[in-house]
Image (cartoon, rainbow, N blue to C red):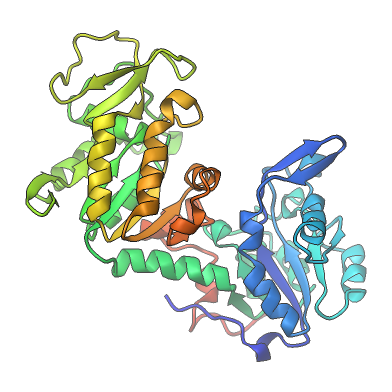
Length: 427
């Protein structure tokens, strides 16, 4: 996929509308809201600096949270403008709407190289509906459009897809990095290539596994995702959590345990060669787990899943909440022999201290690995940041659902208009 990138000629002395993803966590301190994490804000800086050098008027637009089509004080983008100005030394004006005379006046008053952040796009219900009139109103604010929000590019919204019908449209520099990084994972990984998947949802990862299993050498599974594979193999999981099948998929007869079983069956003749000569299944799930009566329990025990698959000796009300020490050791050894690794999803209920070890150990192993390491997913990325390991990974994706859909081989509606050879005429 070749994306159109803006050149100096495309933007010089023009007004540029930039769709960023500043959907960042806010915390209320006294009577004001403050930005808690600026990772997504920093990701847009290369594009912003490029535009400032070309003396453009820069209009930033973003969504924040899930407002119900109307103003919510705790989801205003105003604190982000304040953060850009005070904490990051990027002087940014703010206007409390996205369209209308007030916005146009603010743009008219903006100097060349100046930045204006619009109010939360989702305060307008037309944004999520990809309303044509709303998209045109946004487009009328500028001469050129740049999408710097890969994490929102799987949604055909007015600010991501609709606006491209009315303006010359380009990809931002960070968006291009995301696409190139993920595309290389799918087409040119260095081998051995391992995928590590975990988290609470198997629904958003099953298609990724189906697609990447064609090129990956192995899959290391943890979290709730692992429970589906364990159950598919006849391993007793007691009261461990299994994701409920969404209503739309249930109508289609989708069963995640059955899908896990199908993946195991499809790959049963393929092996991971540990240390170059020890054959292991291509899809590896935990061989031991940390179990407890609930995520709030501090009383834990290690359960061996190899010698007693039916776990006939333990309390039947137990939940599997982290991978065990033998699994950690096995996964670490495979990580050490990998050359490319993609990680999405924690290995256990890492929010609670007794069930955090597996995820932390895997993160630390990846940070030390002699491999190209790519991580994605909100929980995964937040943990890496908490451990201060961000610089030890080759690439950390700012996207969640968009990256998974891309890796699943699906087309993202907001990317097509940015592809070389598409849409040159604007109405």
